[in-house]
Image 1 (cartoon, rainbow over the protein chains, first blue to last red):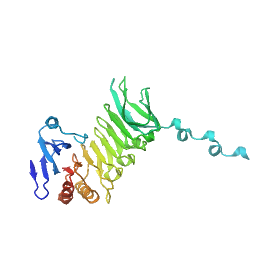
Image 2 (image 1 turned 90 degrees about the vertical axis):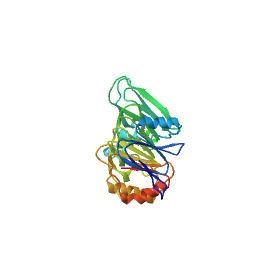
Image 3 (image 1 turned 60 degrees about the horizontal axis):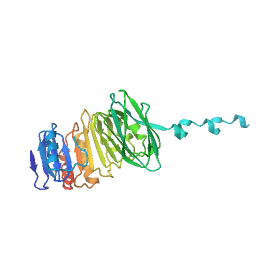
Image 4 (image 1 turned 180 degrees about the vertical axis):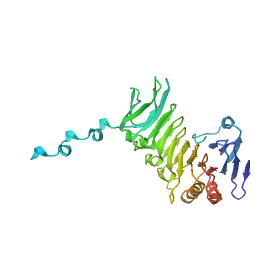
Length: 71
Length: 252
C-alpha cells in the first residue's frame, strides 16, 4: 500500500509486492516481492504482483535501466 | 675467505624465482565450474602497454594486449569440471573483471591479488567467499549475486566504493563504529538470504552515518533487506533526510 507522508512529500510503500521505482524516464530500483519491506522515496512507485509484470511495464513505458541493481 | 660467503644472499642464481621472475608470476582469482559444452565469458579492461595471458585451465589460453576496455573473452569447455583460471603477466593492472554464464568459485583473498581492480561483477551461480576486508583496496564497483558466502564487516569495505551490490548467502553481519564514509555509493545493496545480516542497531547506525557523512542525490539507492534486521525509529530522521535528497531507501 502506498502512503504519502505530507511533510517530505515522500512515498512510503510497505508490503510484499514487487516495486518499481522510477522517475518516468529511468528505472531507479526494482524491489523484489515476497519479502516484506518498506521503501521510502520521492520518486514514482508502481506495485506489481510478479517480476514479469515489472519487466512488461518497463518495456511499455520505455524506461531506461542503466544497471541491474535489483532482484 | 670468499668461498664461504653465504650463497643465498650473494649469488643471484639462487634468488627465489617465484618472487622475482616475472615469467613465473600469476594469480588465480577464480575457478570455473562449467558443464560440458558451456562457454565462460570474462570481460576485462586493461590499460595501454600492459599484457595479460588468461589460462582457462583446460589447456586454452588467450593473450590480452592493452589498451582494452570492457572486452568480452570467451572459452568453451569441452568437459564439465573445475578449472582454475590463471592470469599472468601484468594481471595486477587489470581494472575490470566481469564473469557471467558459468558457475565460478572464488575468494576475496584471491581477488585481492588483482591489486589494480576497480570493477568486479559476478552474476549467476557463483560461490564467492571470504571476508570483504580482503577485497582489492582500490575497488570502486562490486556486484555479486548468486550463492556467495561473503562475510565480514561493512566498515571494512574498500573506502572508494561507489557501487556495492551484494546478495546471496552472505553473512556480512557487522558494522563497527565509529566509521566515517568518505565516498558516496550511488548504489548500496546488502541483501543476505541466509542467516546473518546486520542487527537493528547496526542498520540504524549505518543509516545515521550515511546521513551524517554523505550527500545523496536523485537516483541513488540504499537497500538493506533480506535477513538483515528491521530498522527502528532511531533512524527515522536519517532516512527522512536521505530520502529528501533523492535517494530511495528500502529496509525491512
